[in-house]
Image (spheres, helix red, strand yellow):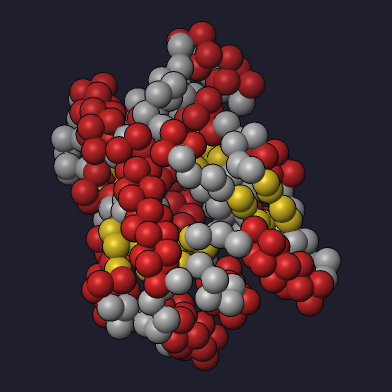
Length: 352
């Protein structure tokens, strides 16, 4: 954004040293509120930071930043918020879901907040929630299309690190280990039969999360512990994607499907559920294989198809990479945010 004369500051609600360090290199300032230590103190600091920075545009991500920025931003700037997924609480019939949905609807439908949806499904849901069309924008996530394909030597090094044999077929999945949204319990159910019938098949989870222990217990219960690896969070997941032979997305909900796009860029043939923007990325049977969410039998059949080479996996991977490169290059999608920022800043200046 610097090339467009946009200066940026970033505020984290909780501490993530590596990510903060990354942003410190490209932003004018990076701050952390440490809300996990003291919520009231963090909110007071947040209010002071907004007052001192005096941004032309305040851009929030996810529920809590939306709420607190609406309450404490003081109307000093144009407010943009990005909704990254059709989160379960938008539709679930629970008290907690109803409360969160009501609060979010209150803020998104009042006060002129510009709301960005990362995919068409999310945009449709937000429109149904009552977000005015004049304040609702579709800006799909972009990906860095450079540097995802690694050398044969690099692939061999990562496979060696993971203890993979040369003749093992590795299915890889990447994401937060959250069963409710990622459907990893469905994936383990699907792989149960694969693991029993194909001793050289292996399933690798890249990522960490609250459901890791539960998923490990499931793998043990299914008798496939030796064929399932949990490698934890990796700062540079592209290197680990390259160690795989295929990628599997079992998500129940997605706003976009960034991990799927990254896997396709890494040159992996992909099996993915029809959620978020994934059906727009993948032409079924051509640039990947699509299955319905919550259907372990369909996932099993697709994985079996890959193992039996019912598809030309190399051609599928080539077409998938081409699709992502042509449509989702971040050098095309990021300027859409810059244009939105500038239009808001200009309107704010005219009204001040």
